Length: 319
Length: 293
Image 1 (cartoon, one colour):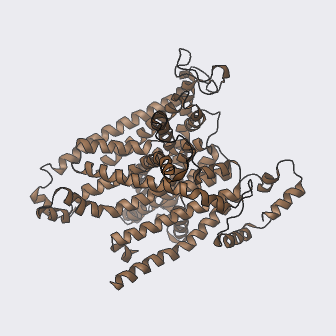
Image 2 (image 1 turned 90 degrees about the vertical axis):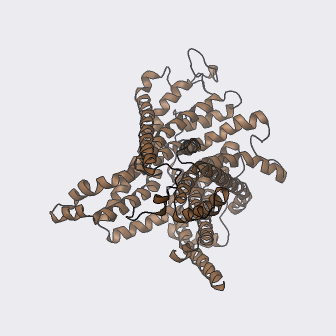
């Protein structure tokens, strides 16, 4: 038992350590890419009519007169203490602004992925009962249609067809209090769920059908297992690791979906923030969003590996 | 399949229905699906080519006094928020969304395939370097990377193309590399090498044709993604900008008028969905024909 625990701990620790160079690489890439941006960020602060001297002064304050590698080291140092710089437009701390928006984005993305998981499990089980049957055909159609539906459009249609006529959900923005918060997240989360569920349905359906013919399931069936105890206890249980992997791969898409949905619903989350920061050329802010989003994805991958290592102990040995 | 029979073969537990029958059926429905998909995409191609003749009005001509009009004889689908003819804008949108989606899919595919062939066939330090770079790129959240790139390069087709290419080549390179490694050690390639054929001939005549199936399958799913993602970028304001008739930016521009004239946001979405559905059907059909599920 202790071996089991230390083994798991060592596995997680190894994974965490391997993430450090990855995060450093992401930071470097983000800075390099953003330094390609057209226009002088310093001129962006001072306005078009400022003199060259003023622009140079601001550029010096922002550290833009240093070479990229020096800025990178400086930035890494600052980020490691939790300082993401200050916004060019508002002068507020980037970390503060992102921290206030993070709960909105996380709630929608997590709720959305949960909705997608539940929907895909139900639909895939229904479809796998009789491959090529009428239910299976319908589910496959949903899966094919699902990947082609533009998220922003589903969001607007949800506003038009559900939020506006019923008045159950706010059309834009967030209300006060926990219950009001949840109420304004339901519809956006459903939209994110719809936009992410198709690959999960496909993958889970395929695994469930494959597993129905697997030898251990045949053995269970010959032993008299049938119905839910067979489907859930034998098939679904073994279909979980690949489903989690697909769901994790979809996490990036779920975050992008959240960005789009926040803009469509006018929700004060990181997606809305990123879109605004990008349109106002506020590059420290954009940089901050990029890093936080990237770290979120990296953490999701880590989380997936850990979950998989718990569900399927073989992962620990091969990884 | 292995040579020995599995318990299931003897027991025939599969509800009495043979696998062969199911395979044949899925093969036939695969062909049908692919045909419908090709039909849809071809229809869009025809619209894109003939838009100047099909469209009743100039898609950019504003008529603010007649904005947000309902359907009429002059404007079949009414007018948008600036009084432009909605039908003409939808038709002209095919000239933007379709070729740009194709471009942002095919360019990464070509570049990725070329890199994958070199990695798989030649190997060495180049393979190792590309492996490192693709690891880093794959760990980077795709969409966020694309937003950063489009932000850095400014909105427009050129930025979208660069962003999609820088992000998209990785999968093709990996796919082709693995296939090339598999094929390189097969009998017919060894035979071709022994026969004294030069590397380019072996690659183009013997190796590449055998990797195309996998690549094609991924390409179609990539096209589905490109159609919706392009529109999404334009919706966010990072992609193709107004006044160009593009379905994503049309939706964004019409959203404030959702309560007044919702059809302005409904139509572009339907047009995008049907095109994406067409590509998805082709991909699904190819997958079925391959015998996969």
